[in-house]
Length: 431
Image 1 (cartoon, rainbow, N blue to C red):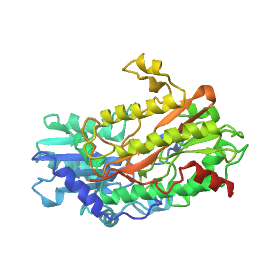
Image 2: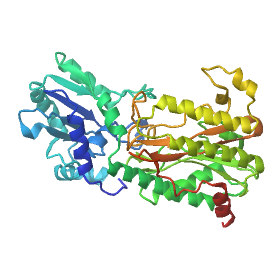
Image 3: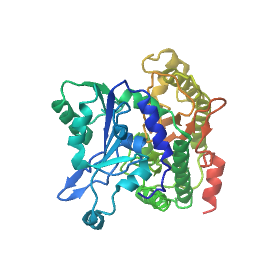
Image 4: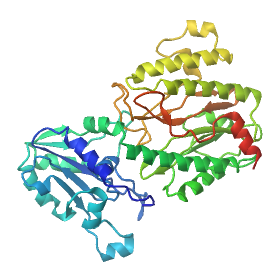
């Protein structure tokens, strides 16, 4: 890993929070992700399953965490099973966690090698009544690949069919959505790295540059600041490409007079940031571009103020829709007749702003959170309104990451990333 060590007190706290929600005489099991193959002997870079990382800090493949707070043997109340390391593995793949470094990373004292797991699990299963299994229940999930977690669950249920099986996800969805200060600090670091990338790009962009060259500038800055790269597939969309919400080709040349939508951000220690900024290829915005830009900025600023404890996610989006409707009327993109005749299930503003304004942010870019429950302090949200006008050849989206506060307005983790038109134009004029 490129990131600096994380104090294991974070993971100790996270485990205590999880086990406090477990039923008596139950255990919970969490698996690492697989290393996914491409072809021949090629593989995708390893990405740890966020749940086992959240609970242990372990960031390597073939790892299993077991939590059994009521276990008769105290040493088996927290167990890590790891792939056994040796000199051969160290030479060919690099050092893996030893039992000592696993303790230092996670705060878990009992560490076994993976080959001992089946035998020890048999003992544990004779002592528990139920098992928490960890399936993917995220509201955006659409998983076709069989994961290591899924294979393990299938094996466990076949071998121990008489046990009661419970769901870890309702617990994790609530716990992970409310961040500890250490987590907020890690997200802040990801945002700070993103800022460095953005400032680098402001000094780089000029007419005839290619979208992928801008992507490369971001990647350079991210890597040199201990990020392993992008928190999600970057969008560098110049001109009319900005009207494709998930444009990821990044293969077009940026023309004078166009503006570039950059939805791109760094990760740090598996925590995501999520930024969108607009910059003019020629260094200055046109009058119309400014009008639309400032309309989006006003919606973003007003929407941010609504993110307070107790806010309902669904009602929040209705209120943001009202803000956007007012701005679209002022821009001449909607008429009063459009509003009067709108379909209540697809309001008129959706023609130009068709996506949501905010989502949870954390270990996943679209992080865990139960959207039917009120917002709470220390939740981290994006705020990302946009106006997309294909007939005028451009679209604008602006996005910051904010932490809900117990009192007052949310704290903007991206407050130092330039967003006002005047500052962006001034910085680009100094290149």
